Amino acid sequence: MNFNLATAELFVPDGLPSDEALARTTHLCFAAHQDDIEIMAANPIITCFQQKDLWFTGIVVTDGRGSPRDDLYKDYTDEDMRVVRFKEQKKAAVIGEYAAQILLDYPSKLIKDGSNKLAVADIVKILKATHPQIVYTHNLADKHDTHVGVALKVIEAVRQLPTDEQPQRLYGCEVWRDLDWMIDDDKVPFDCTTHENLQMALVGVFDSQICGGKRYDLATMGRRKAHATYFASHGTDATTGLSFGMDLTPLMTNSSQDVGAFVQAYIQHFAQEVADRVGKLR
Ligand SMILES: [Zn+2]
Image (cartoon, rainbow, N blue to C red; front, top):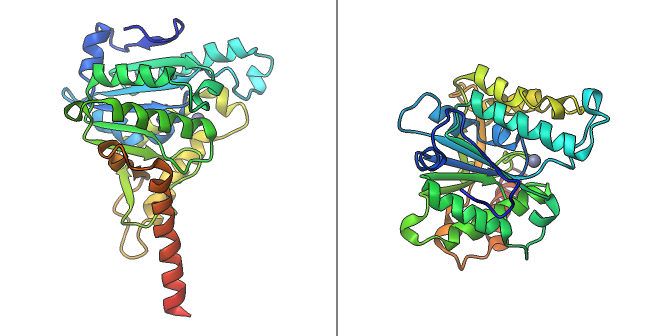
């Protein structure tokens, strides 16, 4: 399979020919950076783990060249960092038994450019090769420009598919900003209770980022535990790990729906809930 950039890579952990590897995909995730998949899509990775008929494929859109670096990696050049981050992402694909891992290798600035459609074409090609049931990407209220850039390109791509080739659901997931603020009726909860050991391995393998001074491994596992306990104020915990999604499916099925207005509606639901409670109790 060829992508727009000749340096893009497709890695199949179990060595199946790439077209077969991609065709078995049921759960597909488009992320901006190496490690975002493992932070935001633990539920589908675990759901597909060791299943014969469920397969997870991950796509990292950017190249990792601009990554922060410290400790062991402090003198690494941008190219060295790209190599390390590609290697780490492939390790995660092995641990999580992904159907395939694609690294599209785009510089972040192209992803932050709404008028640049190169990545959209690659995303359409991947969607056609995989026909997933569910697609995961970043949520539209994320505070990292490149994350939102990826989400917008994924939305653009799924809208280009014929209706009968579209996935069943499209979800925006948590990395740089969690979705605890959304009202409970709007949140899509993803159970991350099982295989905690694998979840820790998946976020722990990105040594270059953790050594860079950010404990994403501890923070990610902690966020899942916090969500599980704080999701419902009454009753005992139904899960011991939870992450939240923003349902973006209506943006796919109704291509005239304005993306900005769509995410504003979720913010309005939150604002209304806060106003209603204060109004009721004061
Ligand atoms: Zn990221």
